[in-house]
Image (tube, rainbow, N blue to C red; front, side, top):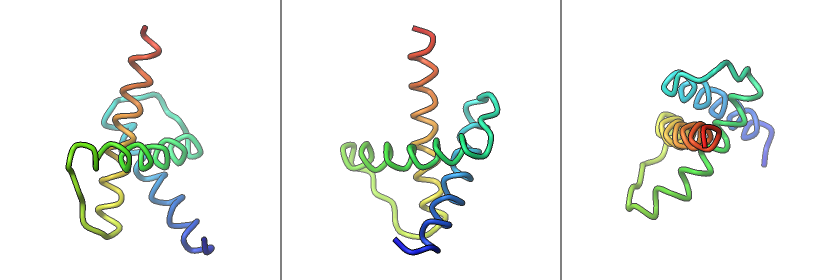
Length: 84
């Protein structure tokens, strides 16, 4: 993975994590937390979306949406588990 790919992954992960945090009304995770949640959300979405038959095109905007949806799912699951 090239240097620009890593930078893009960090920026998209941070943006997706921040957007998910706004949607879920979470506590401030900080930059590192947002990046981690965004990247993990992208992984979650890439596992879930094909199972339910959803597919997105390519591009940076689509990647951000994909990662944000996955991050929202992840944050909601974490919130449910913490309350249980």
